[in-house]
Amino acid sequence: MSTSNTSRLLSTRLISTGLAGVLLAAAAASTWAQSAQPAVVVERQRLSVAEHAAMRGTYELGDGRALVLGGSLHRPTAQLGDATSVALLRTGEHTFESADGQMRIALRAQPNGSIHALTLQTGAQSMVAMR
Image (cartoon, rainbow, N blue to C red; front, top):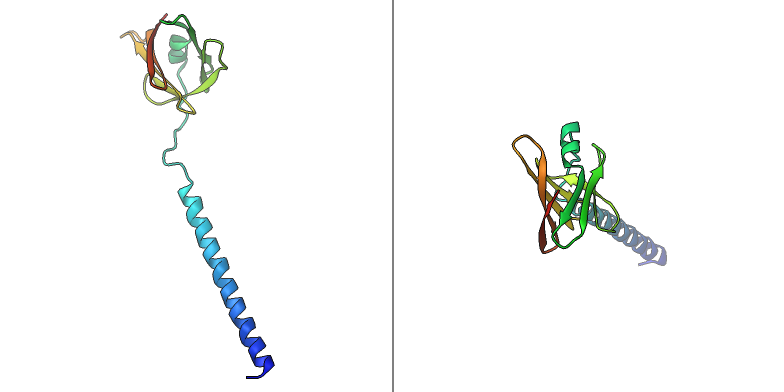
């Protein structure tokens, strides 16, 4: 085999191997991107004016700390003691969760819609708070 034929053959193999590598890398990247998508998408649900008014306020925990619920109709917030206020996502009719999942709040509503207490869960700890 002549040197030019050998060169051409090697060049063809390198190109086809390189193309296969690029295609394989693209397929792997696509698969990774699809698997990196979140399994559950939580939609932010707007509170009604009455719901927001009923939940807003300060709740006293048994350990002496205060939980303040506030924010806006679009972005309700909770502040536990001196910690920074965090945005809440509505997860049910009377339940909320922080975006990082570290705080869960279940409001205890009266038949007339007023909120008299709530249950706060942070990690493994669960506490009842009263107004």
